Figure (cartoon, rainbow, N blue to C red):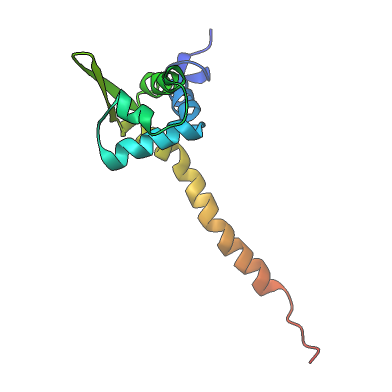
Length: 122
């Protein structure tokens, strides 16, 4: 039997898949930006910012909620959505080794260019 941590769709990997899946959509990233910049918002106020049917926007909010990127607080008939940034730390942790890789690339390119003989034909 395979340990849960080794299977890509269980445990932490499953959570990361949901987070990355949620972030893969531009509308959902825009909802996160809106909540980050303007704070908690009622669902209606979020919906008014987008040119789409309310059920479609509700589905985007559900995906974000399931990924843990937003929380929902009910106040009577209103639903208030709030950014939950903690799961983004998992994304940052996952991307960190690649950041070092990206930063090394310009240095590698500089080394290659320095090794190319100069054009002495003047």
